[in-house]
Length: 116
Length: 109
Image 1 (tube, each protein chain N blue to C red):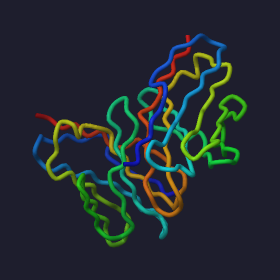
Image 2: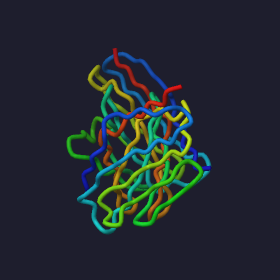
Image 3: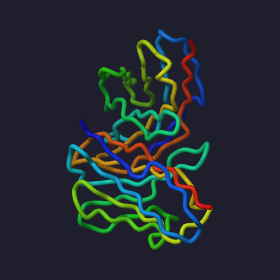
Image 4: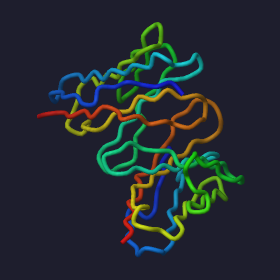
């Protein structure tokens, strides 16, 4: 149980285009989803936290107008990288939890984004 | 958030127990200790968590010192598939995870 699916698993696109990444909880309702970014040989860095039906909370230094997050349902959150540039190339990972209290985050397998 | 200190790398022979230490001397009273691992090019995987009692599940055991300033993750019979980066993360309820550098565990045949 507690499976989180990300799509696509990898994407290559030209500089200036926008890219949408989907994160789905397959067998549970995700009240909160998290988006992380990981550069090569570095650890994961939290970008934003989103709760279903409300605006995402972005970490300091993360541009909310560049990284648009939508969490319109209890099973789907999307991250859109707008006007992507080569420096946005990274490994993007989502996670999800349900309800309240102490519980582990369930992670997707990540999306590798390469901007040419 | 409490800071953690983990050795950057460890080696373990296949079939032997892997003991991964973590120092979290500034942990607060309501922070649980969570362990995750990340196999290369995959998303992190939850392993185990605890507050102050030792915990065991099908993947691992977690030993937390009485003063809660450190903990040890034990993989009782390491396999090659356990090669990964292991992260020890103090976490309050439902909140953000702050990943450190973790420990690269390499299980050797």
